[in-house]
Amino acid sequence: MVQGEILEIQRIPRGRRGEGVHLVMAAGAEKLGVHLGPSFFVDRQSLKLAHGDLVEVKGSRIVLDGTPALIAQDITRGGESMALRDANGVPLWARGRSWNR
Image (cartoon, rainbow, N blue to C red; front, side):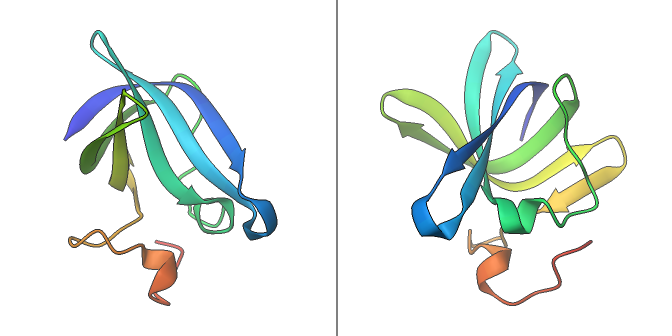
């Protein structure tokens, strides 16, 4: 679990598959890229994230191009949360689950 402040919200073009939504987050002295998921899924969630939000991210740490990053499973701000992947890391948008929690 990593806690920190959202420094930036990025939308990364993915060709015909739309955009991927990524965050840049400050967690103490560390700066992390946080991979949320495709915009069609993230945009339908009730939790709307913004620059400056203090969040808690549960996910898998990876190193991508030499930079620390997280593949987010869940992200929480205050009492609100957004589920993105199940406990095995399978994306919820790929499983046909309800997209709005």
